[in-house]
Amino acid sequence: MKNSKKSNILPNIPAFCASVCGQLHLPLFVDIETTGFSGARNRLCLIGTACLQNGSLVTEQFFAESPQEEAALVAAFDHLAAQFETIVTYCGNRFDLPFLEKCRKRLGIQSQTNRQKQYIDLYALAHSYRHLFGLANYRQKTVESFLGIQRSDLLDSSEIVTAYESYQKQPQEHLLAQILLHNEADLIGMVQLLSLYAFERFLQGGFTIEQAGVSAYRKMDGTQGSELCISCRILEPLPATFSCKNDLFYVNAAKNRADFRIPLYSGALKYFYPNYKDYYYFPEEDTAIHKSVARYADPAHRLKAKAATCYSKKAGMFLPQYEEVITPAFYTEYQAPVSYFEWNEGCAHDEPLMHYGKHILQVLKTGK
Image (tube, one colour):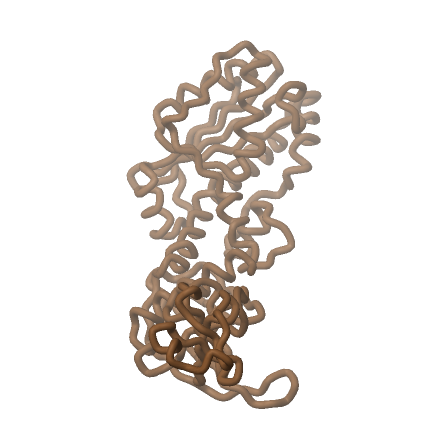
């Protein structure tokens, strides 16, 4: 293990990312370079690590000059990792961590699986926003580019194996420098990718309502409709802009601003009573009335209510919701997938709109 590189560097790490590091109990960032995808058959070239210490990013890279140094490489990493409670990777749950475990088994090294440690995979975090971001893929470089993170390395992941094989045949400092630089760029990128947590804070309600009101808009068929427009201030500025919509909601978010647009339903909707056995349904009036009152009506004009006919109607302006976030909830039909709540001036208060805004963001995140 000829090259063990340890350095203090001060990249452009946002203060928010440093703050998240503190909340994660100062984690160890880990990225490996290998000769293939199978830990049982292929070898480790390099294990890179990084952590924040006293405002500096400390990187340490363990490089295997030969196959004989692979066991020492793993042992050196395990000794370092034992000092940390949290391990952060990018796609590590799928690749880095299983590869290391298979390497240990192949080399006869005791497994280091520790259920008390916290393992964070930033790929899983980034991929959870796929319906919001709409990226072509969620490789680390793609997500970094979306967030505006600049890299300094020259090699792509697919070129590392070729560079390492060339170095094995004829060691050259420029090849080693390129391999180490690529690994270091991945580590620095992971620290900067902690800015993804700003999206999570926003989705969980990290915003305040500044303005809400109804505006006219023109529908696709040329007719005029009404929509609710909500303007918000995001408490933790987002690292990138995104726009997302489905059939009911539209959101645009940039830095510390977010705008919601939701078409209003104008007309009559149904409120379904839960205890239908206590009601009669009157077809001529198209409504259900409680038995305590309806029993005095002519039996010829009433029917025993069913779950699907136990309702009363209300006309007004309504906003859609996929769950009964705001009640009472109204429907177009029994068990329709979307419910509605009535829009009125009372809904313009911060608390109900905050609940509604969080609901919209979660719906768009899950891709409904």
